[in-house]
Image (tube, rainbow, N blue to C red):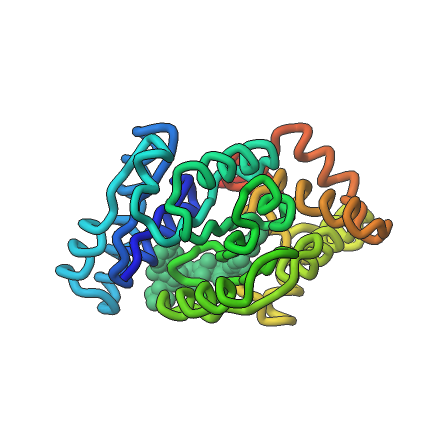
Length: 282
Ligand code: CAA
């Protein structure tokens, strides 16, 4: 079984490390901050405990999974001997490009470099490396241990062999991989974000209130949470950034972010992470 490195120990990174470790992969979890890494290990432990509590994982398997995760504060040491790197750092283009330059320099030459980006072009990321055929998108959904989808994004130069390997690795994680091409927002966010934006426009125009809009979509369309609650979970800043990628990249005014979303982000109302978005969070 290949060794894996995960870059970034935030919500997505710790979820990705969790599922790889649970399925038997040795995982190097890499972040610049040791306290962030320690916090991530605590979160993974708690999420594994939920699975133990409901009987889908034994206590021994939990301990074994945690034992497969090592933490590192340097890319150069963390990626030694790995076959796959999954980058899940902050969604910032310049940061990601720098990480991929570093990965290309330090990871074994045949290692696959995957990004969990939700909307940055895989082709653009691949172009800063000397192995564009081995760069691919592995877009996990939050919460990673629960959600079955991995959106596998082929960049312009991603090879068939690497795509097949990543599809297979995703299946080994118990996920259902879905292959898509590299265009703005891929498939998941190209469809999800216009729905969230429309929900915000519906609120902005006074058609209905927050809870009414979410209730219609929850009970009327069997969505597990309404679009405004989901936006709070994703982060309103992330929603805005993705809508801007769609708007610019596809050049169609239908993707223009609702002015209310822009204002809320400027006001620092980012959803769950700031304590306040469309709802107030504890
Ligand atoms: N780790 C392990 N297990 C977890 C977990 C975690 N982090 N979070 C939740 N669970 C488990 C719970 O233990 C529970 O298990 P059982 O049902 O077996 O007891 C189950 O998941 C459901 O959790 P809860 O009962 O606490 O809550 P819920 O029924 O409201 O479900 C939810 C929570 C799964 C998050 C559900 O509300 C949901 O599906 N929400 C929508 C999620 C979604 O749309 N995600 C995609 C966001 S978009 C994205 O990620 C990509 C992007 O690019 C923006």
